[in-house]
Length: 247
Image (cartoon, rainbow, N blue to C red):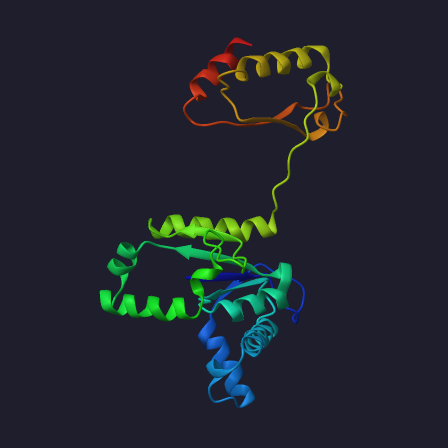
């Protein structure tokens, strides 16, 4: 199964929170019906991709409050490759991979139906989309491969991560020594000792970030607070509390 995440297509107004799901077959059939095309699956890959994009454009125009949509499922390599070429960086393709035993167990119509569907998908080149299974000389086009043998919640979290990464991309935080923050001597000493005792070969914390005026080197004694944000696992919290009590 291949899912595609599109953060809006070319039409529509400004982005607003929201999302919609579409089936690729419905998109092709709806656009083909509008264009008077009786059997869109006999068309070339370029035209099939154009039909999907046309249907997405119309859907986003009619639902202007959405800022992203997902397409499920893309089983044809050629049309998916064309879709990626047309939408470029707007499109994120995720390849969902599950073992044969899992797919057979989940199949509502039995093992034979799953086997027949797999034959059709392979004939369309769906397996070539996976980033973990490149077939020379054609490079895979999926951006991520997601194992789908686990529970549904695990899958939803991985898909949410794809959507969140587009909205809030990760940034590497910049680091600086404590003595460069311009803090009063007693606060500088306090913060330096806390860092010394919570970091090292067996660190208790993953991150310590100074925020607010202290992070901007604009701390004012008697007016400002020292705002500190700490990221840590739950297990060392007792040790961190003990260190804070001793400082």
